[in-house]
Every structure is written in C-alpha cells, then in structure tokens.
Picture 1 (cartoon, helix red, strand yellow):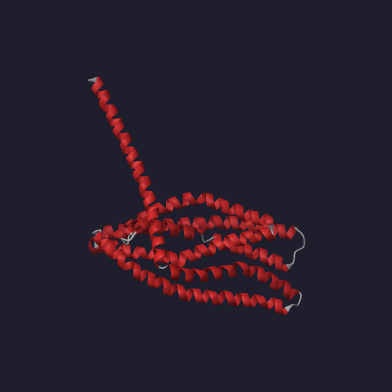
Picture 2 (cartoon, rainbow, N blue to C red):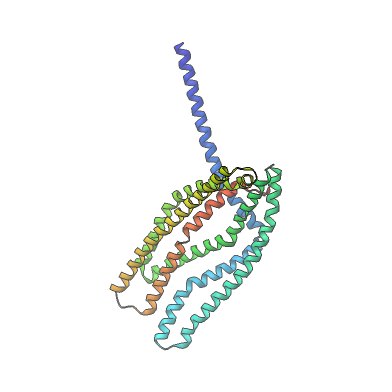
Length: 319
C-alpha cells in the first residue's frame, strides 16, 4: 500500500509540474501574441496607406527640423539685434513663418488622410468579427476600439516623432553649447528608460481590465439592473483614475528631474565665464524643449499599453 501511495504521489507531482509548465508557456505565448497583433495591425495600416502616410509624415519631419533649429536662429537674432544688424535679425521671422506654414499644411493634410483610413478600416473589422461569431455589442465596442490605431497614426505617432527628434536634437545641441548640461540630459534619459518596463507592465494590466468592461457595456445597458450598472461604471471610473494617477506621477517625476537640470544649467552659466545673451537664450530654450518633449513620455506609454490590448481584440481578418 505504501509503495502504491508513493507511486500515486509521484504521478500527481509530475502532472502538477506539467500543468505549471503549460500555464507558463501559455502566458508567455499570449503576451507575445498580444504585442505581435498590435504591431501587425499597425504595419498593415502602414502598408495599405503608405503613400498618404509618407506625405503626411514628411510634413511632420520638416516641421520638427524647423522646431529643433529655431532656438539657434533665435540666439543669432538676439546677438544681431544687440549689434544693430537688422537683416540678420529678421531671418528669425522667416524661420517662424516657415514653421507655421508647414504646421498649417500638416494639420490640413492629416485630417483628410486619417478620416479616410478609419472609414476603410471599420468595415473589415466588422466583417471579421461577424465571421468569428461575436455578439453585436462586442463588435460595436471593437469597432470603436479600432479607432485607437488610426489615432495612433494621426496623433501619437507625430507626437512620438516630435518627441524623439526634439529630445535627441536638444540633447545634442546642449552637449555642444554646455557639455555638462548635455551629459545631465543624457543621464536623465537613461534613468527614465530604466523605469519604463515596470511602468508599462502595470498599465498593460489596467487597460486589459478597462477594455474588458468597455466590451460588455452595450450588453449592460440593455439588460443589467441598477446595482450592476452602478458597479460597472464605478469600476470603470476607478480604473481610469488609476491610469490617470500613474500618468500624473510620471509627470511629477519628470518635473523634479527637470527642475534639477535647470538648476544645474543656471548655476553653471551664472558662475562660469561671461556669456552673451544669445548663448543663454539658446541653452535655456533647448533645455525647455528637452524637458517638454520628455514630458510626452507618460502619454505615449499610456497609448502603447492601450494599443497593445486593442491589438489582441481587434482583427480585420487580413493579418
């Protein structure tokens, strides 16, 4: 009897180990599939509407090049004004005009581009979800969620391009103008890059729970009683508050680090050699550009988590 019992225990332990391994690999595969679905959807939209997107993002790139160079032109203009050189100072006005002209063109083009992309995306999503035998409330929710991919191209990809160009460009210019401040900016980037994976992981979990609720919302509206509806909307409110609080703490952390970097730059320029007004203006403007672009980080991280979860749910049947 003891030998039989020992044999049964060994068999049960082996089954438990196998079950744990299967669970681990299933979770790992699910996480990989979620990320793949999101990026596959983005690549699909990019390939289908390549020409429109290239034209739109060419304007975004030009706008950002002008944005990165304008503090340098402003510094030259300030020095030119102090020396009475009117024509050199007026070059800055032409740079400003160019920035606003390109910005106006980009805003006009991108609305036309992305409104048409969403119109072409919604129908395949609906047909694919019908083929998967999803209920109407889930289909309606997923069509609404699919708008997030178009918003990514329209709003958040330009923001990402602007932030990356501004962060890299301003850090590079700070390294040239004030090397110690430039090194401080690079250290600040490294610090927040190390915090990013943990921040994103919790956001992913919160968006998964929030979007689960959104998919059930139409069904709740039609059938749920008052207690269930109240509980549903209170839970959605709590999830949104948690996401908002995390974004706010991210902004605060960036603000504290930015204040320290500004204090360092001010101390160096005040106690160092005598500098002209144009140099001081350029350094302070590049610093401001750097921290304001870094300030977009919490919003972009939030959007990434949102798209990652939507990519798991939404399919056009073509990916």
